Amino acid sequence: MTSTVRYNLIKSLQAAFHRGEPFDYSQLAKLGISSALAHHYLKSGWLVRLGRGVFAFPNDTLRQEACLKFLSERIAGFHVGGKTALAWRGIRHNVPARAVLYLCGDENAGLPAWFRKSFPARYTKRNPFSNKLPKNFGLQPLPEEPDGVPVSVPERALLEMLSEVGVHEGIEEARNIMEGTRSLRADVLATLLKNCRRVKVVRLCVNWSQEMNLPWAAAARQAASGRSGHGRWTGRLKDGTILVLKP
Image (cartoon, rainbow, N blue to C red; front, side, top):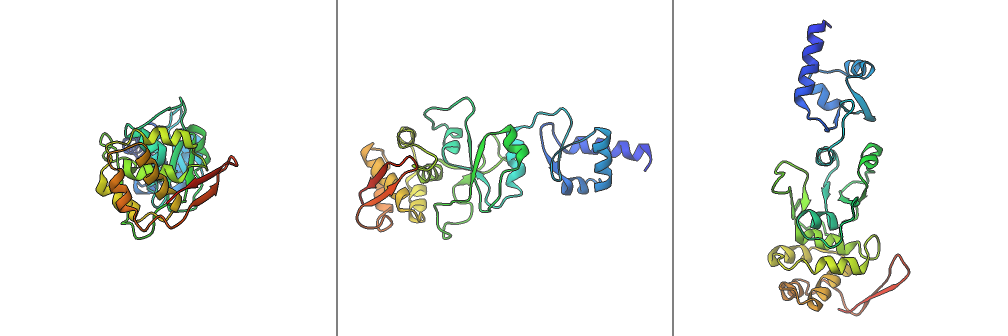
């Protein structure tokens, strides 16, 4: 390969990817860069390896949004959910300086080490919704990032957070955040509740919303009719305490 051709390939590489953005072999191949040439770039210091088959520019600081978008294109159903999605959409209580990202997906996929090194995060495949829920329902990029990673809308994010109560989410913090969800859309929440397969989540949503006198409480109760089971629901939380929820 002539130096001119190699130079043009480097320029195309720099034009194709932004600073702080990871990329992989498949993306390089579309630019005409073979695995052998990618290896040459690594040896020459024009690229650095983040992980197996994943690269970045040298001396780069990875951007969170770019990395999340990268993962969303490789993990089925990947999205930002739960408490993180609520916070990103303006519903928050206490936000630590380095909050742990709550990430969801449909696959048993571990987050790569290069991502976890830069961004504290927890990934879960546990999905509180049934397979009858339309694909990608309640998932949208943020308005300021129209081509960005999917993020749960507040209604979905709330139920995802309630699913984590007693596991990775404390009761008090969850209640404090839920108090800020006064403007939820009743029709969207109703669809999600009708397709929610976890009694704990449905009852927490209905019972707490009534206790807090949230505007959408009655609509939630109606939507949950027949979805929350009968009798008391009792569960032992991660800290050993017992949670009892009435129907």
